[in-house]
Length: 116
Image 1 (cartoon, rainbow, N blue to C red):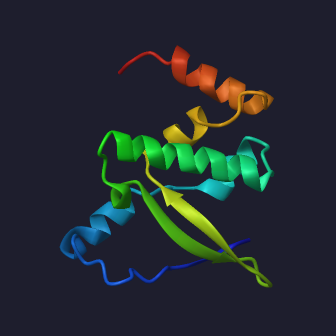
Image 2 (image 1 turned 45 degrees about the vertical axis):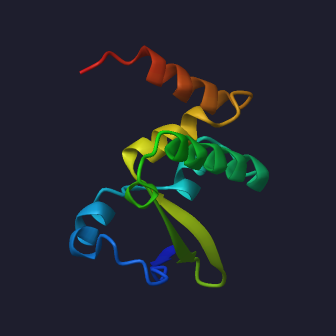
């Protein structure tokens, strides 16, 4: 089981009063999403993450509301991971390589969902 270690905020305090609210919206981890999609290739993971972040930048969506770099420890090694909002999770999945069967199924799921 990986243990979460918070990343220092590098002096960025622009949303400090509401930080707890924004961080509470980050429900997912990139590592867990990729594990569910059966992707263990670091280059594939990095490519999906990069495209999702670029999408947020293009749409001028706040990076810090959707992505947070964290460090997780598995008892022996500390690994970089990302906490994600629901939007960031969606962007990661739709930016994954559809050659992976589970990715293709997840992408189809999002297309076939009825709007609420």
